[in-house]
Length: 172
Ligand code: S3P
Image (tube, rainbow, N blue to C red; front, top):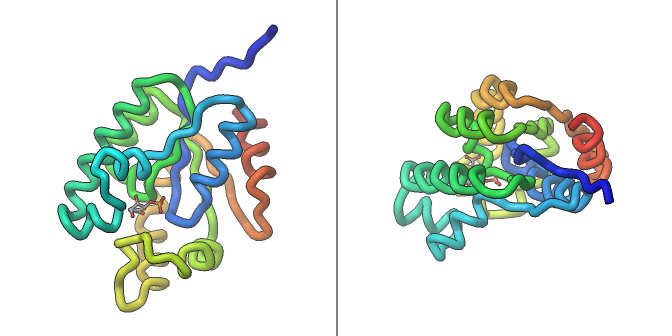
């Protein structure tokens, strides 16, 4: 049989709420490759949730674990890897990702992001007096880094996860 072989890990990047995990999962299924999620791996290893890690050990500690996990996962079998929203901001992470992977930025507008994250209390960076303004400011400062991704997928509503995954698969 002529089996499709994925040679580079597809790394989903972009803001919290952009759909990196949902689209990444659908894409992995479409390509019949494993799906991994860096936040999930960090949580498993620490036996704590992301908010707990931030609260107990701080963001710098989380970022160090995040870099380790990304490096470890990139050195394994090619897969679809969903990363946390801050992962692509560190130069070292971008270098590791571009050496072994293809980065895909899910670029969703701020209203869409806010609608996705506002009901959840799982994002420590949004625990501020005005989380929507914080989200918006984070987006603005991060766009120049996200824009360095190999591929940008604009996500405007109505967004169908399957359709987004197919769009990425077509371009690959
Ligand atoms: C973060 C995003 C989160 C998680 C952590 C920090 C960020 O992941 O890694 O709360 O800096 O944007 P998601 O993008 O999966 O929400």
